[in-house]
Length: 526
Image 1 (cartoon, rainbow, N blue to C red):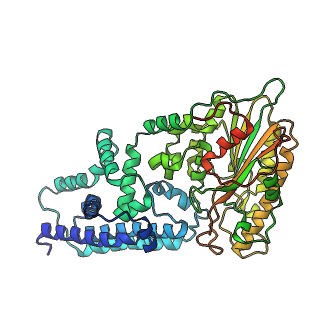
Image 2 (tube, rainbow, N blue to C red):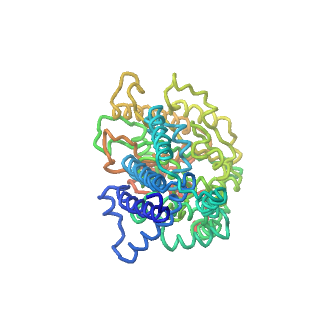
Image 3 (cartoon, rainbow, N blue to C red):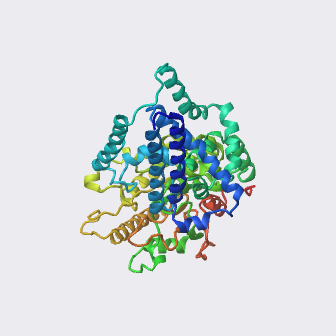
């Protein structure tokens, strides 16, 4: 059959397309497909299939260009797409989201921080199996399948095929090509929705289309629209005068924190949380930006005040383009108003690109894991909230009250996995989580006690970023909303402050709500 190379190549491509179109449907469970599938249209169904064919053709061309073997190109293409589909299904099973283009940027982090991604199975056995499959199967094809490379002008045909396979990908990064392609993809995809796109185009094509949108998105226009629509510049923050000391605002983002009493667990004791309910001027349940992971999405929503849907394609990983949002986020506005801004997070500074993103978002100072002297073998996988509280108190004590201070603290203590003996003598993940939760509550109490003694206005905003990935307790969580509190302390507390009824809130409105309660902003946001 290799005596007829053109028909064989066309057949192998057609076979690969058929298998890929069939297997793409397994990226999401049927229940999720029914929930997110757009209304049926024959025209759109045909367009969705046709839109995938060039993507498959480029992958097929890539395998063909390095081998000149049609059977290998077809098998390689099918394996490539099926692997993406399998990864997407596994990701959905774990955190309720299929694969998105920004996950590619996290590949190195997944292997570097396997525990935090619950990816400990990516061990030496995984690599041996993967190596044997990729190189072993490839070697078999190279040995048994004859090449159809023309005998004349071999170098010319190799160069042509490499250009066919690689040049379209390279041109995506060239503005005059990227912009019209991105516009066409935008017309095809519509409003970015990873579940809908995965259903319509399959995993890999969805990843490619969303990546094209990300490359071609004109963020300056988005930022201008958002700035004008939501955040007129905060020109008049009341810092202090001769009779008033400058305020201190502490935002504490508690990793994987949720009051388990909402879920019927009544034997957990959280006295500080109960105390914050009585002290808060606003408290209640916080809507989740993402269920069970991706802390940066909640974190950015709080810091920016921007609705995730309005970020368009940047919503999945806003720190990849953090510099575009510099002038519309709260830390920058506070810094421009003369405040000091400090980001404190006891984890690797490169994780989620925070080492680059946080200065771009207006933080003058960063305190990260390398400044905590943490020993995982002695102190456990994460810095405890007790140790973090001590560091926060030391930082507060080193400040002056001559200008406003904004301190954003992102804790790690409650994060999973909750493996046996992470808490001495405990093996059950739920019991371990509850014990750590109570320790965090105690540390929070220490912080509140100290802040309440300061001789300046203090505002504490405390919230959980998302529900824990505690699958032995619930999968999914019956209610993934977390808890938040806006609490005036020390000189910020006024006689009229008293217990209030709970109120649901969105993360992107937290700092706006705090500023209004604190009367730190004279003009209403426009």
